Picture 1 (cartoon, rainbow, N blue to C red):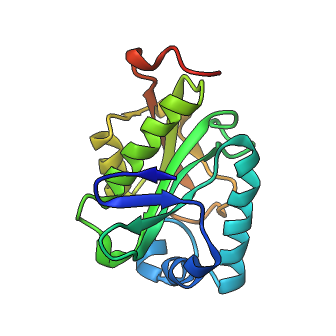
Picture 2: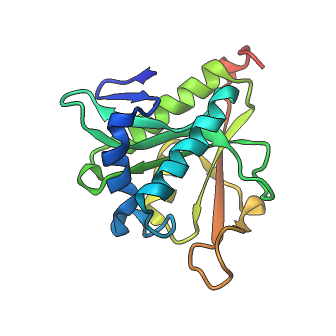
Picture 3: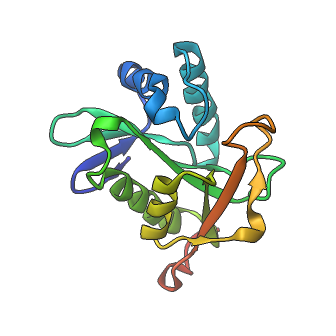
Length: 183
């Protein structure tokens, strides 16, 4: 569990399923991420992230401390296989629309980065998004991430005609003060 001033990031529980299902079924949320998901497809996402837990990774439910509302999904996972980020630690986030523009994504992502530096030996953390996703790219910059054009790629999960296929890669290096952490 990771706590911030306004948020608790924790392993998803069965009670979180309705909020997370609604998140992934929202066309506005999924516009830059891929097709909306059914409840079964959402459960598959949760199961996939549960599979990362043995490696100390996996996205977390983002709960607002004030009222316990589950507002999103954020965390770290292994970089996608057969892409330039394979073998890296990737950070990502998704928030429900009513919580956009309030700094929650930055707060959650910053906490996940701090956790990465304290708990892994990763030399850097990467993030990817569709090239046209200006909101996510803006957050990556606000987090201190740098665009790495040499690692941009056509994401193999999207068909060639998809506007989501062209993928950009950003990264943030481990801070100097965090160099003596576990490998």
